[in-house]
Amino acid sequence: MTSVDAVRAPAIVLVSGDVADELREQFWRYSREYELHVAGSCEEALQLTESILEGGSTVALFVSDSRLPDDDVINALQQWRALVPTARRLIAPPYERFLVDGPALRPGLAEGKYDAYLLMPRGVRDEEFHQAVSELLSDWGSTAADPEVFAASIVAEGHDALVWAIRDYLDRMGFPNRVCSPASPEGQEILARAGGTPSLPVVSALDREPVSASSVRDVAIALYGVPDKVNVPDIVDLAVVGAGPAGLAAAVYGSSEGLSTVVIEAEAIGGQAGSSSMIRNYLGFPRGISGMRLAQRARSQALRFGTRFFTGHDVVALVPGRPHTLQTTDGRVLARAVVVASGVRYNRLRVEPLEALVGLGVYYGTAMSTAREMSGSDAFVVGGGNSAGQAAVHLARHSRSVTILIRRPSLAETMSRYLIGEIDNNPRITVEPLTHVVDGGGDGRLEWLTTERIDTGERTTRPAAGLYLLIGASPHCSWLPPEVALDEFGFVLTGRDVPPETWIGGLPPASLATTVPGVFAVGDVRAGSTKRVATAAGEGASVVSSVHTWLS
Image (cartoon, rainbow, N blue to C red; front, side, top):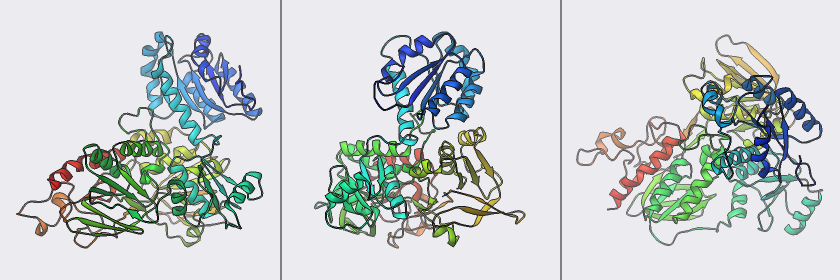
């Protein structure tokens, strides 16, 4: 049973020994854009999958009954995963087996052996079930499949550091994109529209005129038509610096409660969290949500309530006063209250040969846009936090192997248990404790790495196509005035942590207030914060009550 489309579509493989007809009936609505294939056993599904791959297509989703006639379902899912690591995996038993089989199968869900456990629909229009299926297919489409519809095209000779930075920005903003050779028909058409002899890369975004991009900021202007100056003629109630989870939450709650709100973001909406391939422990998303999707939904929510966004603009100074003045690279904003949510920046590795290859196989952050390029290659992730774990799990869908390098003896001190479980159960991922990177290189891009054991000094050189660096972070608040107290590491002090000599009337400021009245700090930039998306969003939401108190 195949799609009616002329071009062969990705497949959905349905596997059951006795309810195959019911599964096929429920998934018929997907047959317009996916090939539907039905198998009666694990072995038949394996043969079917191999045939699909040999035919030049792939599998987007495996859907299995909780019981198979020839194998344990978890073991079957692992075999299918080995054939198609990018495919999503769903167990959908009928009603009579759903509750009985659930307790034994759910531990595998927590360990990342499959993606969802859902009751097979008992009738028509079970939209709760199909919403979950659509989420799985959407996740597959955004992280595994090559886009079929492009919002932006980049004309370039190759994938250099600037092209990578542009693609990373576009991915984090939710814009499907591609790179075209200037000699290709698509590339020639875009260059002709640009006129003259534009320097590469040239970016064509949406219906905007193509532009030569010398920086990511040029692309931001092409996408959003950002004016030459940040133009906010009035004094706003609230200015938020940074559009990560904390800043977005402050914008949503501030503007929804009637505060005139402006958000200024130097890079992409979402901050570091926006580059996470999948956040599985965020409240309300049982199957997880990508950082990009979470950020874009929050942005849309804030826009609905009237928030104004300025992206691609650095805040270079805060001048305290009544009102406070935020100086940006392209103008100023006057605000009665300021929320500092500028987050952190990944620390540098400081291995010079590798610094020269940033964007050419070496990446700071998860760099989701490069994962497909790791197919059949060896990737390395440096870092032991949740972001590093999420990057490793995502890369394992594409790379031949993923090695996590950490200085600590184990991941237990720094990573959530659910991610450790996924890593332990993924045969493509290994963890090397007490190890750091000391050298690396290649001819024009990364080809090899040298690592060193911290305890023994033993060095090992090995092939490497990708190095992803998530090695701690430093606060991004050099633009703050000396009146805002910082701790010894440069994080913003708030509440009872501020120096007692700055207290007013012998009382400390509110929990998220700084030493400057009317200036607040939330999220990762704040001293003592918990580096979690949910915590940052919670701080961003709760700071609005303190803003109201200040304004009153």
